Length: 171
Image 1: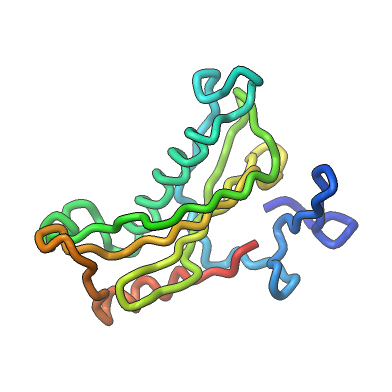
Image 2: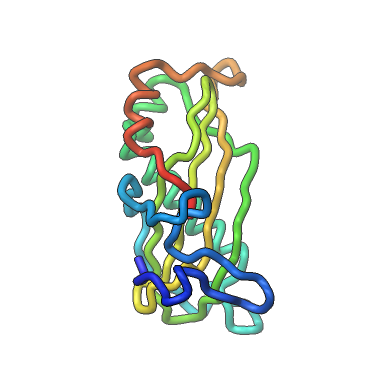
């Protein structure tokens, strides 16, 4: 994570002031339960005609991070196939904070902000590993799904316990 800036961790982009590496709620750094879920590089084919990483690829990278996060919590592909379970996305929210271009190396760290009876909210932070700048954040609301019945499924107490170890505070 980038070192705190002299202005309390705020970085200005245009007229909007963003909190960078600091919790919006408490004002404290909150990365302890985050798990590294992606590491990669931006190639020219990930960029648009202006030379910046496209929204399509931001979402694709965050989606890869999502599956790594859920795998660390025991929701592996083989286990979900055996249980006829899966997660379906019902809402994605990306906040773009710093433009990224070809050659940039990225790290995504992820966690959960909420665990419901049959749903969860994941939160991921994409940062440029060279500069430490936060490139984007992603909030994903997903529902645990019974793939055979095509309906939502309740998370078990054991599944919720595994998930609770990954609760984080958004930054």
